[in-house]
Length: 96
Image (cartoon, rainbow, N blue to C red; front, top):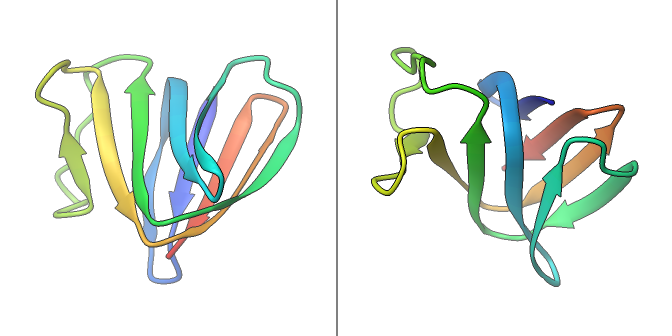
């Protein structure tokens, strides 16, 4: 699946992922490939991204993305809220 995380200032992440866990307004939820189309509001928290491969470089994205210490294929992005849409294995997160 393809993931884009975008803020009003810039695109924070774009790439292929296996799973994404997000802080919904009613609690955490996760989407995997083949998930039904969905639109959801997001609360403040951390977006956990399971990368499709661990060879992704983050040199231009200082500060917004943190590598998870438990696994080299997992990153986390802190958001203050926003909205997400998933359709046809493409996820777009418009974050604050």
